[in-house]
Length: 186
Image (cartoon, rainbow, N blue to C red; front, side):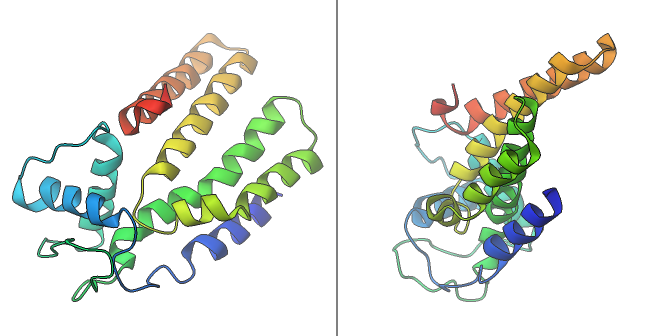
């Protein structure tokens, strides 16, 4: 079941990442944040905490981005960089969301078919597909929240205190990532 969710998630999230080859929706704002964090050092005022934007920046830098895009308007072509450069990390996080939901349902006592159904519904959800197919950090928020819940519930099932502490530490780190991405993570 996990392998099917992984394959379908990867196929739906990673296929066509460079399309459209222009800046869309909030990529205008988050692209400016990427420029500020990686290249210019410019101060950007934003109501959201920095973790999501920092992860978007990390993804772009790992993919070879070194600055130079203006991110001024929607519809502006990416030019020398592929849209993939900026969208691969949110897409990869989007692949993890249905798997995390499957694990959450299993830890809550759901059967494998029910957990698979839940994961399949998320893998095919258009809203999550869009949010994780462009340079946005809402997918990071959802994945961090689901990951925190999965780690906490797993810690409750552990029989050794050291393993339980490890899972709780991971749950706390992921909860911190959720809050550090958007305050709605609280």
